Length: 488
Image 1 (tube, rainbow, N blue to C red):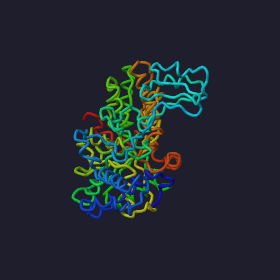
Image 2: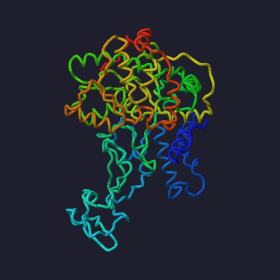
Image 3: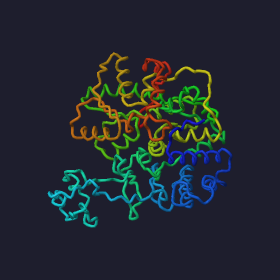
Image 4: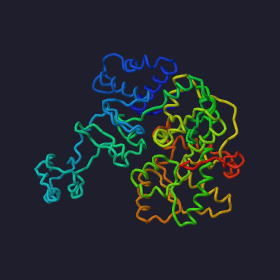
């Protein structure tokens, strides 16, 4: 199976570490052989992607630790937040020795010398060969950048800092990136944004494999709606069958939980509208973390309904008590949701990347199988894309004969989420409903997907079938009797 086309070296290295770790775990010798993985991957003495093979092997070693559910280096994380999922791999961080304010070759040594005059710290000198910045005096205020008529002075940020939407990344005394867990929402943007692959997420994959091998309890998978399109043209029944071959006793659609969420959020929205107050969605853990950590005054507006993942998990446990539950999705923040908020409910969360590594480790192909009826509605499946939550809630209102004209702010990505919350905090967002999707494009644009969103969404759109009535689907299956209150 080879679905990872046009991938970067970073993605390939991460996949190979996960695959080899999974292979050793399935073979039952991981804890004896894990220290050999760096030598299995990096042979000989010629470096492939760093300065030397010794650093390459250390990077792989730290990645193997994370694949095993450990921190990259224990000694550096003695006070680490147990629910923090995203961490810097110290050995992989290049320190990015970037001069933030830089004069480019576009400088014309002009007579106006606006940059010199704009600098309040006397850090800029004009020479016949162009302006020169004394970095010991420069305070990075950016006034010279704004003043230059040729745009010859530029301001450059480190990619990890630039990619973080909540300013949770700083530099230590050695210019190595650090993450502030008090600000971090575990969205994974920095994991994707770092061009050296120096930031990654801790995995629960080995724990899942151990649970599958023990066979003392049923282990069920809960797959996010965005999984359709991640394995090329493979259908959901085909993907489910491949997951069962790994040893899972059953596979459930989280889209079924999305139906449950839409059913309950519609009722909650009706109550809120009657009371004249807005409501935000609660399905995206990074968005909920954003509210909790950066806009705590707005927590009262967050829907009290659990996420689709938790909703379907509660349904599963009501009919199959004692099972081990494993969420599989494109989202790194879901791991934080499991580790932080619902540790007593959901056992594990893994990503599509980790699922793919497990399938490759076992040589399992996503093959043809008999088609099966859809469990969820097309609206529940639509939670995978931006605007899908609003559409599902409006559909439920329509089915109940209520006003389905929801005044909604559909936030597509972190920037739009932050802007909407800032307006809401200021009382300048006259809407009924705020749909917060932290990843651009929705869950299909998540940081742990296998395919580019343009390709996966094309397949996803063709698969968007299922029942048409959310209310009928929920009530006919008895899902309306489940407790989906967040604080249950």
